Structures are given as C-alpha cells and as structure tokens.
Length: 400
Ligand code: FES
Image (cartoon, rainbow, N blue to C red; front, top):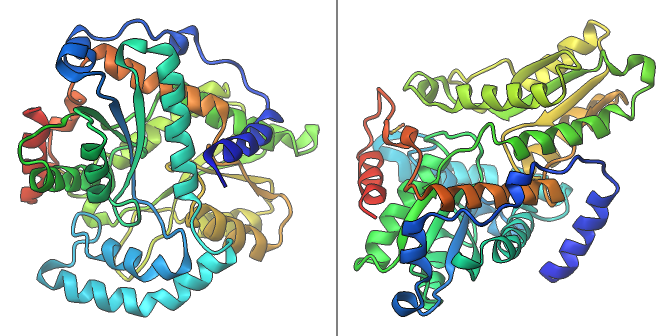
C-alpha cells in the first residue's frame, strides 16, 4: 500500500477523534536559525541539497522471515543487553532459541511489526509539513533508520549519500532518552558514518529527547480522553490510568540512565494536560530473564488491581510512538484478551494521529530555529558508563 493510501487510512482513523489544535507556535516555521540557512539551503553551496530528516528507532521485523535477524541484532547490541565478551555467540544462541516463539507472536499480530509502516508515514508527513512551513530549509527528505531491522542505519546512510544529502537531523523516535535505545542508535550512526562517510559529507545534528513536548502530551491526552469516554460517566473519573513503559535492567538504571526520570516527566506532562482528572501509576513491562528489572511490572499491577476489585483500568503505552509487538501482543493479547475483563482497555498509540504529526513537525522546526547540534543534556554521560562507543559518538556529533 502506498504512503498516500496509508495516510488516507490514518486520517480516516484519526478524523473520528477529537483534539484541540496545537499552539500557534507549532505552525510558525519562519524562525529558522541563521547558521542553518547558510549551511543548509544556500543554493550556491548546496544546490538545494535536501535536508534529511532521519527517524531513528529500534525497528521490528516486517515479515516473519526477518525475525531471526532482528533478534540476533538485538541481542548482539551490548548497549541494550550487555552480555560481555561472549556477546556474539550468546546472541546467536538466544536468537535461535527464541525465534519460533517470537515468530508466533508476530504471526498473531498480522505477520509482522507495523513499526516500519508507521515510521515511514510519520516521517513523510512531517517532511511534507516542513516543506510548507520552512521553505528556507526545503526540500525536507524523510528517512527511517532502524537499529535492528530494515531499513538499517547503514543502508539509510548509503541512500542519503546517493540522494546528495549534506545536512541531516537524527531525530530519535524515543521521546525519553535511554542509553539502551537512543544512545545505542546514535552510537551506531556515529560508527557507520565514520565507515561509510569518512569525508564527513553529511553534517549532522540530533534531536535526542523530547519527553515533555506539548504536542506529544496533548496527543497522549487526546487518546486517553477518547478511551475514558467509553466508560459510563458516573465511573469515568475513577478509572485508573496505567502508563506503561518498557522496563530496563536495574544494572542499566543503576549506571545512571536518564530514562526512568524522563518517562516520569512525560507522565506528569500528560496528567497536567488532563488536569489530573484520574488516579494514575507509572508501570513497567517486558522484563525478561532472571536478573532484576525496574518495576512495578505492568501485568502484575493489572492483576493486583483486579483482585482488589479495581477493574476500570486504561493502559497507556507511554514510551513508544507507534504500535509494536509490546502493545499489540503483550498488552492487547497477553493482558487484555487473556484476562477477559472487559473494563481493562488500552489507549490508542500515537501512530498517524494528525496532532502527533504536528508535534513532530514542531520539534524539527524548533530544532532548526535553535540551531543546536544536540541538547545540553546529551553531553553528560552516565556516571557509571564504561562504554568507549558512548564517548566516541559524543565526539562525533560535537564535531559536526
Ligand atoms: Fe550512558 Fe554510556 S551508558 S553514556
């Protein structure tokens, strides 16, 4: 299905939803940084080379026969799952062992992950809006770079070079920064760039986190309100909101990873949008293996509340911007379907929501206007970080 056709579906889906408009700031594209104008669009220098807007995420297998490769890359990533000097053989072994089960899970959600479809749509729509709002930096060309699935970072970079991109924005699609997610993607981008673009023909800057962006919080709030409307009015204000984020091993948390604090910041921003209308908790899902992970565990929290007769629960996936196996399988099937309690429900993911596209556009416009290489926070490494790659990637992005 073409991007245009998918967009049509997304618009139809989103059109049924309510939503206040983003602030006027979101629609103002005139304030683009001077350095950017000079370096990006001076026809004499660049011949209208496109501004690459690269949506970075972990990715997922679009087809069942991509599952093994996806799992292997995932477990081979020491930034995500540190397995020491046996990382590679262990990654092969674990991927081999888990492939049949994970394939079955993807089969149950339609034969693959929708994350590529949503990422391509979000990137294309964002660039379309950027062309309208920021002609100075147009054309804006959308790219997707995944850490563990196609299109991989290295293939996207090759395509960008072939397209004549000289200025690019690495735009993380994890709103909250973790060294396991955004950090890993940026480490990979820096490494691959040094190999495939040693002359540094592409100048990069980074949107490395955006946990409290107004449009992000507004879109979450809109989807939550829509789900709350499905409960009887007399019960609505007492429905418990369970904001669920992917957990982290405690070894990563104790290394000083900023993710738990940034996820909590998003939850707070969303609750402010809602006027703190409902009781809520932040909970953590997808823990695996015997080592300790950050909790409370989403499934156990849901079971515990049901046992206490608190059955009106709305799950809100708060740390991903589109549907993926952790929403469609872990929340929708393993928890909601298998529990069989009809008042346990889930807020929609952000996917192609028009408010979310405006939020993404606003983030890039702000970034262009501020003309920064990255946030100030990005430069500070975790206090217990021992990864050489973390230092090398910061040096790479500081020298753009
Ligand atoms: Fe956080 Fe290296 S692990 S900066």
